[in-house]
Length: 147
Image (cartoon, rainbow, N blue to C red; front, side, top):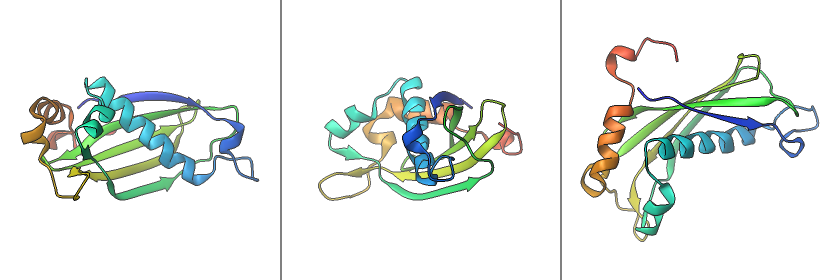
């Protein structure tokens, strides 16, 4: 299983009146983590979009564990948890600079044609990408392992 890691410096504009990161910003950070993972696997999501293929979120989950604050550095860990050729589930863990877990999340995506939202097979359309996901995803034996 390939686990991507990306650091984000918490900016003042990302915090709320309580001085902690506003909850919706974690969703943006999850997307940054997903983009980093795709890049590390050797692909570029923007290139896929140029081909008329998009990957909308069909489900997203976030469980907040510990607040992050302005001036801290967050580390986003991202991996492919499930993949079946059409749908991908990405998992995320976001840590503070002390290594404490701040968020556990997941997002489920499907590939579709932009013009009609009909499903597209990653395996058929981008076989190299498919193979990379098959190699990078969490394997059944890793199910009980902690990231």
